[in-house]
Image (tube, rainbow over all chains, first blue to last red; front, side, top):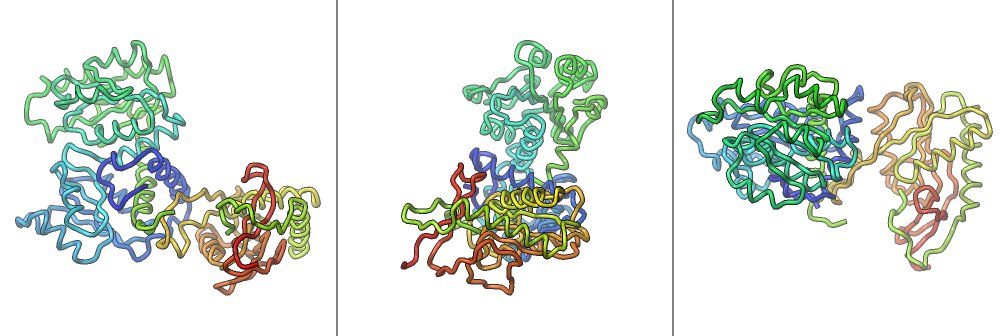
Length: 319
Length: 188
């Protein structure tokens, strides 16, 4: 059963995910209407508290809240009292004291959202914490993949890029595994998270340093997800040059052609923002089978569904 | 809205499959009579059991008038006033027929009319979809106990009940081939 908070993708079992994705499909219908408004969360207040820059996640949470008739307020760390030295605890306690119903939080420290959930009565939604998790991104990726591929049981999803710094990848591995998909992750050795060897014990999970082997030898992928090379987190020499990264791990137009020779419908995903020409070539980003804008569109529907299930019902009652 | 839980064995059958189809035929004729023909009609079924009922009404209308009446579904979950009283559940889909509902005569179709709160939610949901010329309500069973000023235009069967009783509607399409209306609970 979906609980009060959404802190980790591991909070959701398969049934919860199915419920959220089914709800998101109905919300997607609303998105196509002239009047994009539901009265469901009227009188509820949702605060987007972003300690890191974000365009799509913050705006899609904001739109989702507004379309559900919740009062939505954005607070970014820049220009807030955090920049005057206030602690996270004081900031969230202050905001929670204004009787808000939900806090959507992005923070650069892993575990910040779980910490906040112990300080306040409001529902807390993790919109990305450090290099830990980003559960709503994984849900919208699952929504997009299911729309393209149907049931994900047994499907092979390849995730490529900066795994060490990626919360998107961590949440995706959990959610895709819960839905029965097989996941192979590919990264240069320097961008593999430490301890990933222990993950390999999971069913259907594999790691590799060789993108071409994974894409073309043996088990063909049903979908490819490229992750952003996070320049802002690149303080140590993780790879020699951008060019070398592209040659080894970028989805270049040559790699796309070889994929298309086998499967011209293969969905290409990227959580954005993209570094065109680095991890993904423009030809791949704009390819016919690219699902990147579908992901953005699904983002609003999925976040409406999450807000609905966390805030609309009586979480104490059992059906 | 009828109860989704299966009826206990002691539940009394108050409408058989034959009663249901006869009632629907009469309701279909009433809809035509009231509308002076099939022009401009749109049927919107309220999930879950209003949807197969709307399809059946459309089939009868096709038999009688030889025209296809547009059928859609209208999910009202997000518009309910009792969301906070129970755990959330995934809403159904809302499907508006291709011609839309603007300036049409929309007939809402549901299985059981009880408090009227589902219909209130449906009227609000319709408001966001367009502006019909008129909205009418057809139900298989009216069991009374209204809590809002709402009434049905077309009723398959008026079923006096006590509020302690439960009404269970089973339709072949949604209940594994079983089809009847039963009452359980209460003192009688």
